[in-house]
Image (tube, rainbow, N blue to C red; front, side):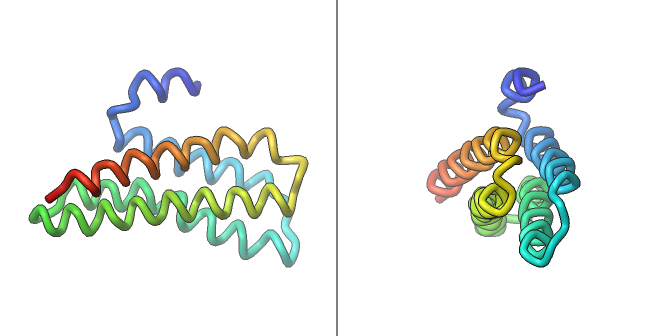
Length: 120
């Protein structure tokens, strides 16, 4: 499935939606305990808001509004990367499954950082 996403890498609405879906599927595999529950909550919020905020940016009312919303997408993708790392630390058996998610969060962050910088 990863190759399909990369063939559509410029369809950011689909790519960010798929990222959110994959975050949900990953979080459903994380065992619940006092350490993981808040991490899961944070990751689901950040990971699913990447796509939601991208959709808002896509419908922005002005360049200023667009840049602000892309800035939020950039922050949420970076936060997702952080919480994926924390969950992998809490549940080492999920490391291999978490790595591609972390990589996608990193790539999305780089893409949105680049867009943010280019908007004047």
